Length: 388
Ligand code: CMC
Image (cartoon, rainbow, N blue to C red; front, side):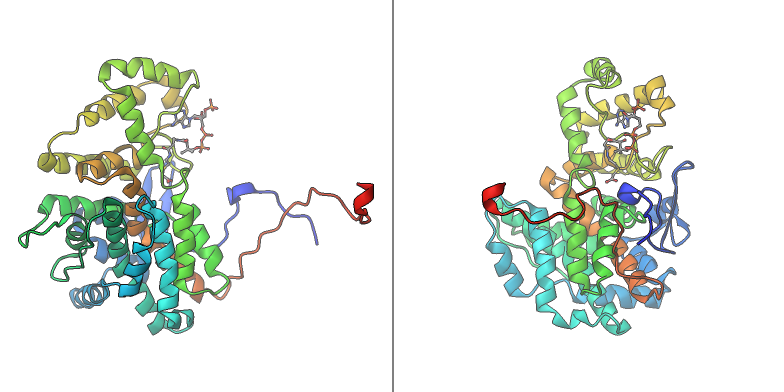
């Protein structure tokens, strides 16, 4: 009973208390557990940031060693998961494969349903962070019709991922350290973003106290959608269509007439430069040093310069967001566009799990069950078929 507040998309309703990530969109601030994203991107690794998100504090050297060991120990997949993935069509979207495989993990680890036991939660969390790159890489190899490359546990998290993706047969394969570092940074930047659509999905499904694989599979489903994970791919398409810096003024005029959007600009929360976009822009330089310059970068830089000085974008507080440059890096690293969202999912996994853990131990949490404003008919009598 009682009147509900109408708030579609929960733009103004807090659904939880959280101590994981702080965002100030007006100031362009993003912090994980109080640590500025800029400092983490510069000094930390993705596994260290994962530990921080999950545990609330940076690890000591021993704690990081143990954590790295535990994650590395779980990188392999059960052969039947590989079998499951082989069953997909050759052109299956890797996000569909990732979502299905993660949900299938709940059947391989039925003990995961005991979410009240902290040791068990640690085990499942470790497993999921460890297996996500293996599943992502297998999905990619499947789409290429190439044999799977098994994990190499001598390598770091990101170097191992690159090896599973791109190692062909040469035993001496080693990814360039600068590319490994760029991938670390991109994963760190995507690791959490408070109550975004996919995290909200993980929490909503997790609130039924289902196992974490099922909850994270729901998050992957949310991330699959073009309004959430798909914008960087759209940026690349836009840059290709513009084709040369000469065509930018005409393109901008079209945007101002409302013909289309400048993809990779604007954000629901950030009304200032997205702090992640600044860091990515720098990572672009490092990557292109190795791979050679992508001609689309020149268009992106010029586009940004013009937009940041244009009254239309300034007055609407439209700044580059994380997706404006990330697609360029992913392309330089040789990922096909369908893989971009998979990279986002691997990066976001520790954030999903940190928020899932927070939910599970939060005594105030209830099953997610929003109100509605009913707009249909009230009571009326059944009409027999012949009288309709
Ligand atoms: N290009 C041109 N105009 C824009 C753009 C843009 N990219 N974004 C917003 N505007 C205009 C919009 O038309 C409106 O103008 P007016 O006041 O004259 O009607 C004004 O700016 C306010 O926009 P809004 O649509 O009310 O803002 P929102 O908070 O609802 O939308 C957004 C945020 C991200 C959906 C939107 O900015 C957008 O569509 N951007 C392009 C897509 C994109 O880059 N998405 C990635 C988001 S970050 C990654 C993630 O979260 O997954």
